[in-house]
Structure formats: C-alpha cells, structure tokens
Image (cartoon, rainbow, N blue to C red):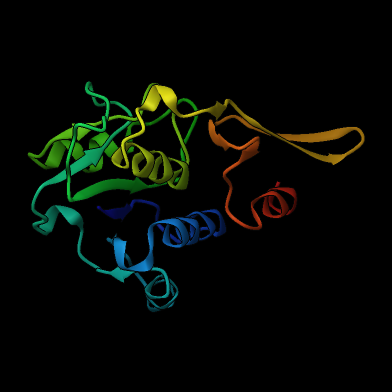
Length: 184
C-alpha cells in the first residue's frame, strides 16, 4: 500500500515536515507520494522522504485508490484492499473545517473511508491505516486521547488529538515533544 499525501497547506510547516518524515520512516520512502507541492525548497526537502509531484492528486490517476476523510461514512477495515490511500496533509483545526472533504473528496469519484470519529495528525492517520491494512481492526488499536507535555512545573501543553499507544509508549515522530515545547 502506498500513501498519497495531498499537501493542502500553503507552505510546509515544521510540524508537517516532521510528520511526513515519520510516515516515510515507518511506511518506507518508496511507499510515500506527495502531491500539490509548491516551491523548489519544499520539493527538495520532500524528495528525501518520497516521490514528489507538483500536480494535485485530483489531476492524476491512481488505480484502486481510496481517500481517507474524517467525514466519510464508512470506516477503513482490514477487508479493504486498496493500493493507494489519499490523505490531506493539513494541520487540523478544532473544530474541523472539513478541508479534505472540500478540497479532495468532493472532487474525486473514488471510495472514501474514515479512521473513526476523532481527527488525527497526518502521521497518526497513516500509521493507523497501515495497521488496519496489516489486518488489525480499528477497535483493536490502542489510543491515548491527548498528549500532555510538561514544559515546566507549572506549565504544560495539551495536544488534543489521539495518538497510537503500543507497548506502553506513544507512537510519535522523533523530536515531536521537543518541537512542541519550542513551537508553543
């Protein structure tokens, strides 16, 4: 299975780059495709993590593809057998603005699935989709509902998104905690 990340933000944020690197690490560079990428610097950075196209996924044909959209009616399951999963690479808003639905799903006539009711970071969504593709049903994947990062004895950062928990540890990109401490 290959992941197609339709980059929907106007630039490549540090968060996105870290999440994209994480996807490339666990899925393999050969299984990651970035679309709608603008700017030579961004293209060069992302070429190290996967295949890069300036075109939108809407203007390309990928056989047996599915869009992962948090607002889809049907949930991805191990019975699904897609070759490509299209994801919106976008920093999420709370409440969600439904950008994947507006920018991608509504413009393509292909199957659509969700990963449950909660909005996830791009890398968490890709990791969950990979686990489901490997035969693990969504309900068997353990989540921590939020990440609380201690900055000081009297200050903490709460990232209110679900994170996969395996063997008692959260599945996070390398450097994620440190970046959260410096970016907030």
